[in-house]
Each structure stands twice: as structure tokens, then as C-alpha cells.
Length: 292
Length: 235
Image (cartoon, rainbow over the protein chains, first blue to last red):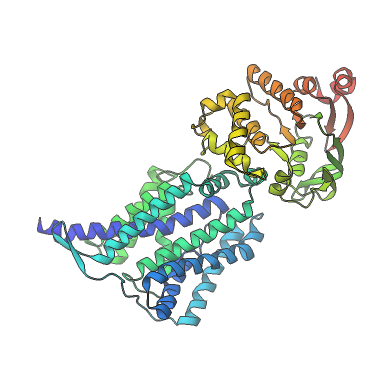
């Protein structure tokens, strides 16, 4: 009982918190993949840029809350410019071009950040401090805030895709962008705004997680690997699948840490992915024909 | 209304259309006939802006379409009912119809209501299935939805590519009746059909395409009786 309350329960909550934030990152990745057919290798760097933009804004305004609004907007704008100037000319070519491009963009963003802020580890102080007694244990308030914020965002994203015209346009473009254009919808603009939205979401995840992790130029690399696993597990292009898989990975990572060192956890996560793919080659909710 | 002159187009390095010229006048229904692989669908895609012609001109009401995007062409009043219908499977019938409204200049609630009423008047089956996802519709119902979608836009010229393909006879009849109805409503139709008998029963005249060029043009009556039709189409 003590073990449950003192060890297992906090770890479960950690997993949930991390999984929900990971879900924000993976959702953007899977939507971009569904829409543009490009696995965005620079997604982790947009996540990292969110944290650094946050540091910059906090440096000026001393307000985490202002940063939480300004940083995603700034990174979203970077995303929009990136899409228009670099990705758009490649849509008519094979997906491989987009893949190589985003890989290069990732390097550019990482080095740019290193030039501006240096390669040192940095921290952002949590805007919410203290802890709350919960189910017999004491849990940090910031993590509770993180869980609430991520859950609200996931719900908002779901409402966006099911209830708003803009969300319906994105879903239609994922299935058949050319036909949607033929119906009178400015599809290139849908692409740009979706890419910007996905960048903003990654930035938001980066900034939200910054107070519990450290901020450094490589921080996106680790996360993007996990986010890729989530997207593959959830089924390429499936949004619901990504959220479910993110929670599964978050919980698995967090619980496995109790019994293994971090390197072995990483291996175990890959093993989990391999087992799932053997049993369900398209992931949890993958559609037919996305990869075939 | 639609005038194509010496249009050359193709995919990548593969040319498909070799100098197609045709004209569709306002209020007409014109059939485009030909065997499989003769370039009929490519012609429709080129007119809609999905493919950019390498040479030649395409004019709609005097506007040059050759450098316009598909959405700009749709907003001018051209609607495509594509081969294989291409409705959005994950979206409901209502959402599919509302996407059709994207090409309309005015997307007010009043216009939406009016257009939906018109569409339901012609296709009561769609009203029954309004909240069902597109993927649950039968082939004939999907075809109705694809036509209803461009009616929502208020398209003045409808490019219809193989609307009866794979449909049961009852549905073929209702699609044919719908084309007549569109004509009566003043909509201009360019109809690509494998089924020449159906096409010529509703169209005023027709073109026959072979290997990326127009090889014959005549009124529907002449086409029905001409030995060229039988030779070129094997009917």
C-alpha cells in the first residue's frame, strides 16, 4: 500500500502528465503527415524553439503566462514562413524531398539557437509552485497544471476538428486536397495555416514541459523520436490514435523507469513498438493505404 | 461559355492531350465520348486546373483559365463531378454539402438554407442520410452527393466525369434525369461518358476523342446514327 501511494501513483501521474504533453507534439506531427505526406523532422526543433522563445519572452516580460501566448504565436509564424518558402515548392515531388528538407531545417534551427543562446542547459522556473495533497500523496502543483492544460488543449483540438469549418477543411484536405481545391477552397492556405498551427502546438508543448525538463539545443531530438514512435503506434495519420499512443508511451516510459535505467527504458519502448507493429502492422488506428 | 483551343497537356513527361479544341455554349449539354485511355478525364482535369496545359488556351466566359488555381476556377462557377465521385468519406453528408458551398461568393446562412432545400428537393435520399458519414453511402448515393456538392456551389458549368460508372440501372436513370433537370435549370454540362446511349439521350451534341485529340463532332442525333460512332466507340 505504501509502495502504491509513495512510488507507483506519482509515477502513474507523471506518465499521464508527460503523455498528454507528448500527445500535443504527436498530434501536430500526424496531422502534417496526413496532410502533406511529409514526416516533419523539424518538428522537434519547433518544440525546442518554443522553449527558447519562452526564455526570451520571460527575459523581457518576467511573465511565464505572457510567454505561453507569445512563444507559440512566434513559432507559428516561423512555421508559416518555413512552409511557404521551403516546403511549398516540393509538394509536387516525391515525399523524400520533403523529408530531406525538414531534416535540414532541423539542423538549421538547432544551430541558429546555439548561435543565439549558446549550447548550455537552461531552466525556466515553474510559474506555479508548491504541492497539493492528492490521494494520500503530495503532488507538485505545476504538474497538475500541466495535466489540466494539456487535457484542455487536447479537448479543444478535438472540438476544432469536429465542430469548426476550419477543422473540417483540414480533415477534407487530408483525404483529397486536390478535390477540395476544386470545390473552391484555397488549399495552399489550408496547408500553411495547418503547418503554422502544428508548429505553434509543438512550441506550446516545449514551453509547457520546460519547467520540468531542461532547455538545450538538442532537447527536440529526444522528444521527436518518442513522437515518431507515438505516431507510428497510433497509426500514421490517425489523430485519435496519436493521443492514445502518447498516453500509452507516457505511462510506459514513466512506469518502466521504476525498474530500469533510462537506456533500457528507451530499448523497452522500441520493443513495445515492435510488438505492437507485429500484431497490428498499421498501429492502433491506422487506416488502410496510408503507407502501402 | 467554355472554349478550349489547341490544348496540350499530360502528366510529367507523358503527353496525353494533343491539341484539343472544343466549345460548350451556355445552356448546352455536350457529350465527350471515347474509349478508355483516350484522354477524356485528363481533359476534364485540365479544364478544372488540376493540370496545367503546356500549350493552348482555355476560356470560361472570356476569362483565361490556364494560369488559374482550381479554387479560383471553381469560384468563377465551374463545378467538377469527378471520376470516382471523390466525396469525403470521413465527413457527414451535411459537411460534404457545406464544402460545396466554398466556391459560392456569399456563404450566408440564408443561401446555405436555400441551396440545401434545392438539393434535398432533387435528392431526398441525401436528406435522409444528412448526418451519416460519406463512407456509409451506396455508390449511387455518393454520385448524388457529388452532383449535389456542385449544385451547392451554384456552378454554372458542370464538368461531369463518368457519373453512371458502376451504377445500377435505376440509378443510371435518375442520374440521366438529373442531367436533364440541370439543363432545364439553365446549367451548362460537359459530360464524359462510357455509356454513349445514356450520354446522347440527354446531350444536344457530342465530340468523340481518340488518342488525345477530337476526331469527330456532331449533333446527338447524327452521332446516334453515324457509322463513325460505332467504329470509334464499338457500340
